[in-house]
Each structure stands twice: as structure tokens, then as C-alpha cells.
Picture 1 (spheres, rainbow over the protein chains, first blue to last red):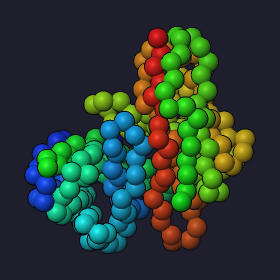
Picture 2: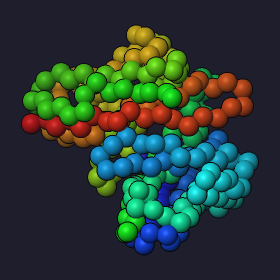
Picture 3: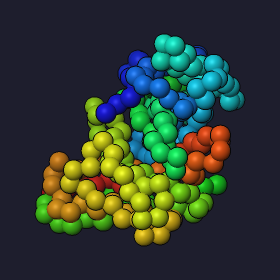
Length: 114
Length: 116
């Protein structure tokens, strides 16, 4: 089951522009994470935002979280051709004291044109 | 850096074969996970393990089993491969919960399995 739904499904921008993608989810979470996947490869963890945080920055990435609306957004500023990839949000929920479970949204395909 | 290694990048197997997908991590992580990724269906959790000899069913466990005999290794087993198990399989790991710390997951590069 997909916890998160992402919007848009695909995004095409020029190098230097900003890219914004949104994620909605359904249940309570411990934290929300964003991942990048280059074509046919594994996922790379980008950023984690805790449920009690509202905004977080990492380099050119800015993530917001609104737990009242069960939504998050990822902003990539000053995009580069190397940012071309699929981006996934994922919600992390504690299942047992021993560990959590990560559930993914459908992803946003981002194309950055040189 | 934490490394999660999946033994095969590409695999082609015949219908009915028993298939083993291996995943090894080198950072002493307690939690390990197997996902499959399909176009239009996203990433779905098959099985996970919180520690050695422990296993939990994910969202789509039918047709699969797992083995975790050592902390660093988590194997996914397709008991009798079928064509609808053709997919990209991704392994991930994270530390077990320690107090209030929260962790990202580290993924392997994936195994693209084709069942013919």
C-alpha cells in the first residue's frame, strides 16, 4: 500500500530554475524522508524531517512538513542537469520498539534541461 | 559510508525455479528490508527483519520467504519463481531504534530479476 501520493508525477524545468514537488500521506508518522533515484539504480537518502519539525534545509534542498494537513514538499533550488532523477517521499512509522517501517509514495520524475 | 550490497545486478531465471536474492550490509544495522519496484506501483515492502532470526511480513509477502541467519545478511527467496515476480528488487537497512534518534535508510543498487 502506498502511504504517500506525490504531485506532480513528472516535472520538466530549465537548469537554474527551482523544482517543487509535493507529497501527501494518510496516517500518523514518526518522520518523513525524501529519496532520489537515478534511472535503474538504488535510492539515495536526501533528507529526513521529524514529525515535530516544520522545515528543514540541506544544501539546495528545502523540505516542509505540515502534519495537520498530512503533507510535505521538497524544493530543489537552482537546479542542475545532474538533479535529473525520480524523487520519492516516504513515511517512517515505528512498528515495534525494535524498528520502523518505511512506506513510499509513487514518486516525481524530474527532468532538468541544460 | 554504510554499504548495502546486492549480489546480482541482473538475473534471469526460469518459471518454477527457486531463486535466492542476497543482501549484505557492513554497518552492523539491526533492521533490513526487501522491496520490489514496478512501474505504476512504486516501491512495495515484501518482508523485513528487525534483527537476526526475526522476520515480519510486509505488504506483499505472498510467493516470497526470507532468511536472516546472520546480522549482516538478509536473503529473499522466491520459492517457485513466476513471471509476475519479474521486477526490480531493492534491499535496505537502517540501525535499530535507539532512544529518540531517527534514521534514514540505506539502499542497495537493486537486482533486476526477469522470470521467463
